Image (cartoon, rainbow, N blue to C red):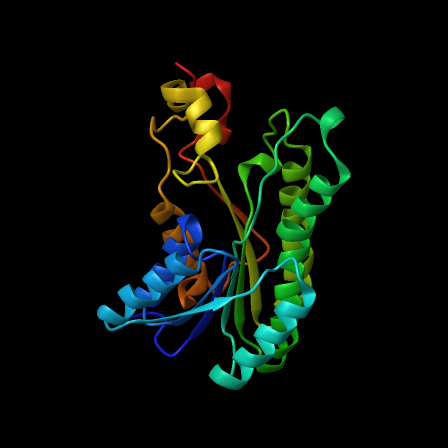
Length: 253
């Protein structure tokens, strides 16, 4: 129980990677606030499953793209829990299209959720963590930040910016004992990646040296590690969890 007594917030936590991270943190003893935007039934399900296991996950609704909702939520959580020790920014959206067809509203939606949503949540916890001289911030990025695909200018821009934001924020908060890191998943079996996986079929695995797709639990284990004292001297890093995908084409069979 490496996180017993800690309070954690995970955004986009009702399914996929976010759900796995929320469950992983709870299994280590943390009280976890699972923030969801629209999947209420799924969020309440993980809340109940945690209760049945003697763990604590609290489902709360908020859209990270809405400043007012985030301000209200975090202010309420501070009163309810006292402090936030761990923040995992996982909420994200995708809207792929070739740039020449991409509408500005779809650019804005992806940037506002993926990048600005991360900023909003970090802004609510950064000063309290600095004041306490402790805290963990974990941002979920993507290998798409470095290894781009056609039709993902907005998504790649949001994730590349998250990487830079993570390093800059880490430099600011490190003197106060707060770590800021990012995890860059590769192809993970989630609803968000379904379209790409279905289009590529089994050929997708040929590009991954480990010859399998990642599971949400693979990302959750990395997040849990970064949240513990075992990672207290790691900050400003983007940790890639992709089964070797980013090693390049020399591994394609």
